[in-house]
Length: 595
Image (spheres, rainbow, N blue to C red):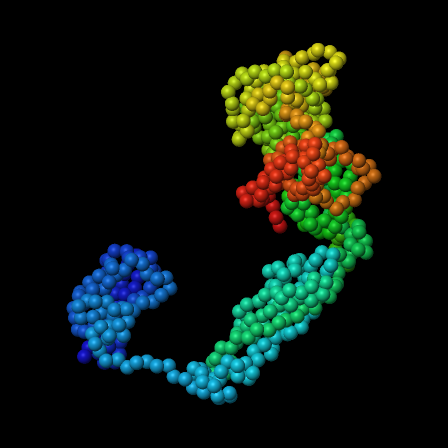
């Protein structure tokens, strides 16, 4: 009797159908037919077999299969299915189901059992005719694996020696250390690794234990799985770079001289926290604080270049490069240089008052010319407090004109607000809301001396009210000598420009904040600056949004714990800082660079 098998599949956007026959015990392709059926499910390059059929029309077979596909809603991914067609077009999932439905006689399939050739227990047959326990006693697949391995560890830089001369940094029980241990294990290629994990040991024991689960094909094709423990002995050995540093700390090849010519160190305090957060100075062999900056010494010239690239992404800098010949071998034509990278940071800082050069003001859409610097990164955010406009100045635009600040933050004067009257509606400038207002202010230092009152226009009308304190620049009593200001003929300067609201000092000073710091040497000429550091901490407390880029640690004081004299205020502020830090981690703030 000649019967047909039907195989269908899908390639691209079309279904295809092959009809096979096995009339003489051999299968041969009779005909391939492309079916224009609708798309059914999400199945690509799957094959489905139907049969056997009795002699029937090819079109009947085709439409029966199409009816089967139309009833299917989804196809299990990675699964090959078989369907069996009955007399009335009924699809069965297996031949046994079809035989049971039509009453066909079938022989029950039973699984036999044999005796183990070693211990004689009853077991299911396998290729070796041995039970699992006897097979493990007969064959040890971990015989070729090392059980004890010695590795070298540098205690200074916490790195491990990958023979012959590569040092890899890895923490205890990390994925990187596990990969290093497996790479240094001989005989692992002879078996198949299934699982590897650390076994806890005391950190001071100088032992690392790794539990391995491996598989291997043994007698007559049987696969055996076995677990073993490999012990690594850690021997202390200093790497080449650490050895040279210990012998002579001046073993450096590149120095980055970071400088800013301003009378304060606020920029370096903030930059120090950015360097710590992103671990940008991890390759520095020595850090030294100088009078107007910091020097970073690197063993490799490439590490110095990477550090300068990081600085260019977080600050407005200008770089000058130089090198000096140390030695020259005429036979091998080898030269030894020491490189110097002089990095100058822009003297413009946040909250500085600036008088823009005429060509820069025109290029920014007639901004200013008196503007306030709101933010400093790799560009400057310049804000016009009278027009409520903000523009950005990039690196090339700034260094082409290279102007300086008219007045800096050290020249801020404290004022008391007597009256505020809004003159405009609320304006949103890049997420910050301002209200232009007319205010009457008086210097706090003039109380008891005179009755001088200043009428000023300020952008802080939204947050100021009568009785508040504010910090601003006193242009009425300032001695200003600026070249850019002389270029504007007929420019009338206001008496006062308010910069920010001032908060009560007694509430701020009760808080105790602790910031991480770089391990650096301090030059004799660079000592002092404690007062500037306190002002930097106070600036962080007044501007919680700036803590996104810092590694802030809160050190509670006794007042915070007891809630006396402003302790509740400090505790609330500490909670706000913690929430801001958590929010910054979730939203991915300050992902500037990581090596």
